[in-house]
Image 1 (cartoon, rainbow, N blue to C red):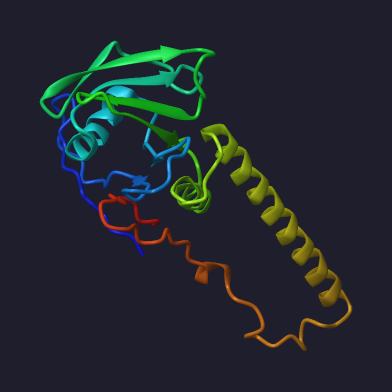
Image 2: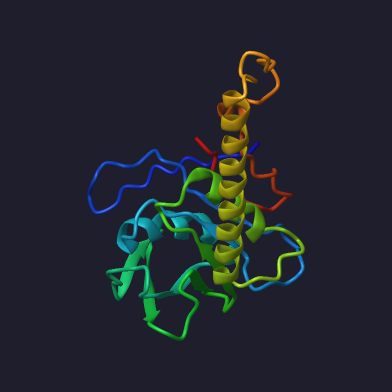
Length: 208
């Protein structure tokens, strides 16, 4: 179960969007780590995606004044973006920054890092990444988290293929009619949840 904060932020003069911000942050007081949370933007357009993120984080971390991204996954990096009533300067690097990380600096000189989950990521993988990014024992970099999630996805896919093969053999040997209809859980019954965060955390995504 998760809590949602529906933002209705107008961007570029367009009508406000009712889509909730997909963000999870480590609990206040959690041990220091390389990543402070995870953000799952809906596109790779920073001008459209940053304002809602900054609006959410300003009250928590102090006014966000600068962000730094890798150009690996952001095709267009604007010099600055208007967000929450002020301008946020945007820097970029081709090699000096983890491509899956967003670095944020606040007016109070605080510095935080978020894992950026690619917009095209499936809900199940995104849920796992959000949980991993806020686990108290987390010790991986942003790219390390992405690699770990990919290994899990590949292992799950291999297990599913193996199950399908065993079922095919079972059916070919006449086992289909004997199989109890309740012996397997339908795939649609599998629900992925991100745990409710502790006090002070803003968990703003609910899997669809």
